[in-house]
Length: 317
Image (cartoon, rainbow, N blue to C red; front, top):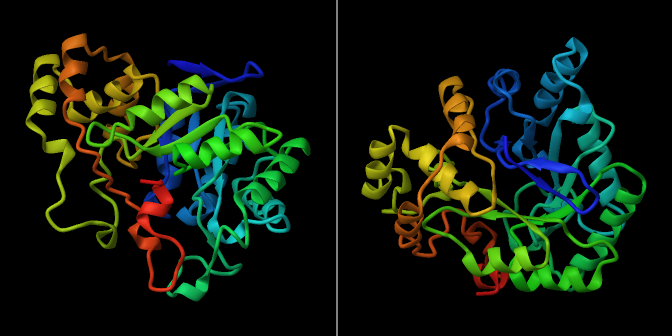
């Protein structure tokens, strides 16, 4: 396994298992199988609705002696309805209870979007609070306090533009160490990647396979199918690997963390083996030509009449 080192010497596995869309009733078995295969990095979030089941699977693995807690890297995220000074700690404490662990290795702000307390997913403009009412800096300060209490070891953000990330880097007492964003050959985010590298912020790529299995309401008509691109199939055929392994190797070769999602035992194994795949310079250059700045998870679900959040304001584009 490839690892990246953080400022305090801790190391994070470059390939992890994402748990978004992993159904209750299936995710526990996927976690157990992943642990047997060799996965040690798990990416979670309360909004995924499966942290209780994930926690039970992890507890069973720990209790059985299969793994030790210090061998695991567990990430979770602060959901949008828990921003602000008073809400961060209770949200983290609930995640720790659900996952049945004493601390997280990494805690992220899930989105730079604020919802009112009690709102899981918004239905109307009144469900939102603006970033003027609840600045990201105040949420980040509360995250820093959780870090000081030892409830998490590292802090970061998710779905942050370079502008928003830069603001936190300048204003916070503790710098974000990870930015988790969508990234794949159709959305390479090269400028953001280079900025993160200059600032010693690890770049974690979600939806590295193009998120073809996400819910229908998040899909657009006639959207491109990354996994079916002829170039991927060509490289996969030449190397004797799968298109998914090509995509994961591409992400790893760029120096990013990748967190593919699956509950399929065969896919879990093949995704894990992508760490050993090497793409040559010509293959990497060819894949670099596929960038069309296409977001599969574009944030349009936060746009509602009367809300201050728009796709352009979220991504600062």
